[in-house]
Amino acid sequence: MRRAAITGVGKYLPDGILTNQDLEKMVDTNDEWITSRTGIKQRHILKDKDKATTFMATQATLKLIEKTNLDPKEIDLIITGTVTADMRFPDTSNQVAANVGASNAFGYDINAACSGFLYSLATASSFIQSGMYKKIVVIGADTMSSIVDYTNRATCIIFGDGAAAVLLEADEEGYGVHDQVLKGDGTGLQYLHLKLGGSLNEVTRENVDSADKYLFQDGRPVFKKAVTGMSSTMKEVMERNNLSKEDITWVVPHQANKRIINAVADQLDFPHERVMMVIENYGNTTSATIPLCLADYESQLRKGDNLIITAFGGGFTWGSIYLKWAYDGNA
Ligand code: UT7
Image 1 (cartoon, protein in one colour):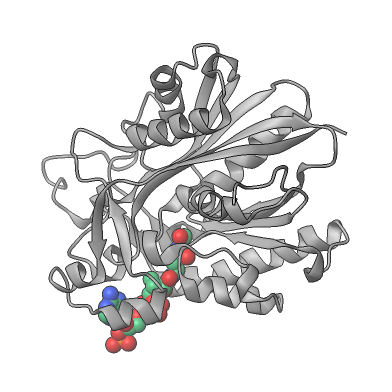
Image 2 (image 1 turned 30 degrees about the horizontal axis):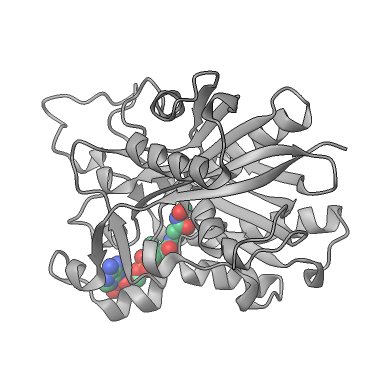
């Protein structure tokens, strides 16, 4: 059986660092609250106003190409999960293809908020499984600093910028994506959204300075839904594939809040040391959190490891993917 295996990972993080101590000077908050309520210590911020999501996605893809010795002309398709494309159109993937010399590729973006990478990976995997395409780059990239209100302590402490990309190739030896459980529930809109700048609420002279131009989040209901959504789809995908918790080498969760991740692990009675956690250094980078985890844990990953990738985000969107890792990371 043909499956889509991840055969490489590349990441890019901008140089700018925003620490909890920096935030203490900007809003009424403190390091103790942020650390204990979220697990975040710092975030990377793209400060150069000439650059945005396409730049970071391009850098991550160039790193991936270098690491995998890939000829960019062999890339068939690029899919980017993002909610912060440089422009409303054209999309990020299309621009990345041009920037990296993927002249035979087409591409498009998937907007599924924090589940953007999960949905993109599932979509790309189906294209490989069907035999339609052979090499697909899947990117998660977000410039959250462009939509965060740095006078609102409820949201500005959480988010950061970053990008990471994986290469998907066909595998017939049992490695790669085995199964996916994807969910959505549009009634979650009220809790997490960005109103201004869409076709419903165009930017006008009157509203251009309103808080509606920034992302809105009602944190508590999102927190609860995130825990139940990620843990229930993890259970479903594990049951469907006859996997016990002992069979799972790593859980790769979306990084929104350390307490959410720990609660999900506890729901499954899963040891915390086998749950990837990078939130301390990056904050919530929306679509980029999961591939950033894979990049940072790559050296610890071994061929044959069983991974459960799980995410939850605005929409609501959520789900879990079961995959078998295809190569030994370089120690
Ligand atoms: O990424 C995809 C989806 N997003 C998520 O999954 C995020 C889900 N939500 C969360 O992670 C958490 O709800 C937050 C981190 C956003 C907030 O944490 P919380 O524990 O749910 O806090 P809260 O909003 O219930 O606020 C608790 C208290 C409030 O004070 P009172 O009313 O109890 O006096 C807030 O005003 O903490 C206060 N507070 C803060 N205090 C210091 C809220 N933000 C801050 C802050 N610093 N930055």
